[in-house]
Length: 319
Ligand code: NAD
Ligand code: UDP
Image (cartoon, rainbow, N blue to C red):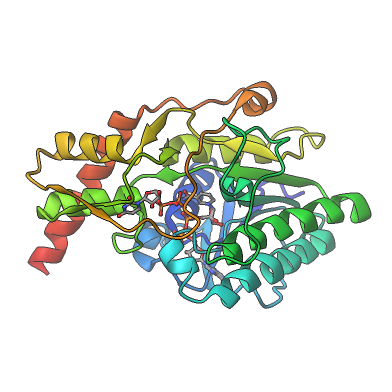
């Protein structure tokens, strides 16, 4: 390995990927950000373009890539249901062909490789909270399947490359993560509610709003990803990374209304098909293996995220 690790971040211009690039550059690593800009944005990484340790490459991970690297974070994949359902065949290709291409690259370069997997591998879970030993409850033919099954197949590929080719793999199962640089139009619940509250529009609760999610602030998540990448080779995962604080979607809306001081009203909209009823990570494994747990509580993280969207909306208004 080079003295300065050369790190590839696929999906590096996205929400989580761009924060990861920031942290890796801060750590003195060389970063190659690879993205096709499907949901990512140049604005997320523009501040890094002057750094001599940072390089941006427009590339679609469903095609092979030939570069020399020491570590790979495979983050490329749309994460919002609205975007991953827009072109479901491409979503499966991104997860599966993308994993094959990144694993092939890791095999040739002997790089350590981390997969951004997801709590969606648990589907609509019948075990609560979800621990890594739970195999999940996933519909293979529904509108969410392109993402859920694509990510499950990617996990399979990671473990087969590990068993068959002795690759150094790391699989992180990421639970709902939020923070600055979420795409304001991507339809995820935190960005939707904050943008709606700041604009004084109705807050759209899907279903009765009693379904739950556990929300992790992006800085905590990125810390967990880096600790996992740097953990001993014997730690392959899968490892849940998320904040165990569990809230109903209605409670999330109440917090956003309170913190923004908005006059927005909540309205109920139809619940999307196969929307999971509950989700909470068991992070015992992450605590034991990575000495990691989230430090940023929901209201503190929401306050930072609201400040970001407030500024963004003001810029849009004056543009
Ligand atoms: P995002 O949509 O902001 O980022 C994904 C990035 O991947 C974007 O920059 C997009 O342009 C890029 N991309 C998509 N398809 C690509 C392709 N074929 N080739 C190259 N680049 C491509 O989403 P995010 O929230 O930052 O998620 C990052 C990763 O973390 C994803 O793999 C996602 O599945 C995973 N994850 C995120 C969450 C979450 O709550 N944010 C939860 C679980 C898992
Ligand atoms: N949701 C909602 N209103 C919105 C967007 C989402 O009530 O405007 C709900 C959605 O139905 C789900 C939860 O919020 O129950 C989280 O949705 P998101 O799309 O952020 O992520 P998911 O965890 O479902 O992948």
